[in-house]
Image (cartoon, rainbow, N blue to C red; front, side):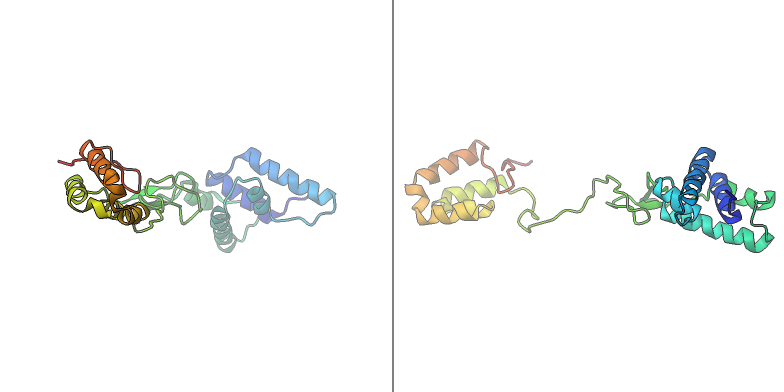
Length: 208
């Protein structure tokens, strides 16, 4: 099979940029050769490297731009001159700001709090992943002193339960007049012994 000069140039640029190895280029060319032998329409070599998960679309676009520059400046579609190859040989250094980190997949600078890389789409594993808030826990932990006072003075009508987000239990406590006073007393004991939990399962504790 005669190798298309543009495909050969594409592979040479990709190798010089350090994006692929010679073995990977040979494998892609061999796959192209097999397709040609089977009468399957040949694709560009970049498509084979993408299917092999060696290159990303962004990298392919970068190589194609370099290829067009080489073709325009030298008119040579079969090889890269030393002057042309020397420029892209060293990967472009990506500068990052103080609040950025490099993506572990594509190496582009992204925000530290980014959940996903905007360039390659890979999840960064950042602790700042999107949070879906129901609006009930936005105020954080409930104050232990306030909860205890509400339970003592207004707990009989379920105000303490409403305060920590247990709306259903608060309504039930209101309708039963503090569970015939028994539930009211139990809640006071639970709060005083710091075994009382809010709607998120967090213990309502004294915070110094």
